[in-house]
Image 1 (tube, one colour):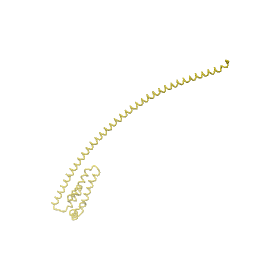
Image 2 (cartoon, helix red, strand yellow):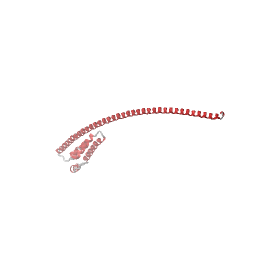
Image 3 (cartoon, helix red, strand yellow):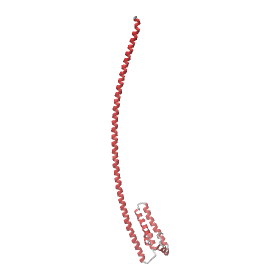
Image 4 (tube, rainbow, N blue to C red):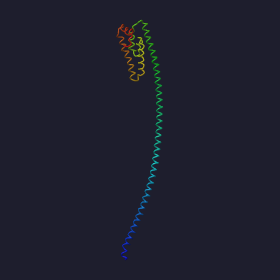
Length: 220
C-alpha cells in the first residue's frame, strides 16, 4: 500500500483525536462551570438560610415586644377599670346616703308640718266654736284662698284625708322645687285652694252649710 493511500486515513484519525480532545475540553469546562454554579448556589442558599434565620429571630423579637406591650396595656386597662368601679361604688354609696338623709329630713319635716297644720286647724276650729258660729263659710273661704296649698280649710271642715293630700303634695312640691314638676305641684295645690275659697265665699250661708258641712262634699 502506497504512502499516498495512507494519508487520508491518518488525516481522519488526527481529526477524530482533535475532536475528541475538543469534546473533553468542553466537557471539563462544562464540569468546571457546573461546579462553580453549584458552589454559587450553595453559597446563596447559605446566605438565604442565614437571612431567613435573622428575619425569624427579628420577627420573634418583635412578637415578644408586641406581646409585652399588649400585656402592659391590658394591665393598665384592668387597673383603670377597677379604679372606675371603686369610684362608681363610692359615688353610689354617697348618693344613697344623701338620698336616705333627704328622705329622713323630708319625712321629719312633713311630720312636723302636718302636726303644726293640724294644730292650727284645731285652734281655728276651737276659735270658731268659741265665737258660737256653726257656719264656717267665711273662715274656710279665707283660709282656702291664703293657705289652700296647706289644706288648712279642709281640716277646718273636717276633711282630714283631703287636707293631708293637699299638704303632702305641697311639701313634695317644695322639696322638688328645683325641677319644674315641683313648682307645678305647689302651684296646682295653690290654685285648688284659691278656686275652692272663691266657691265657698260665693255660696250663700245656707247653701254652704248644707253642701260642705252637712252634705260632706270634699272638693269644690
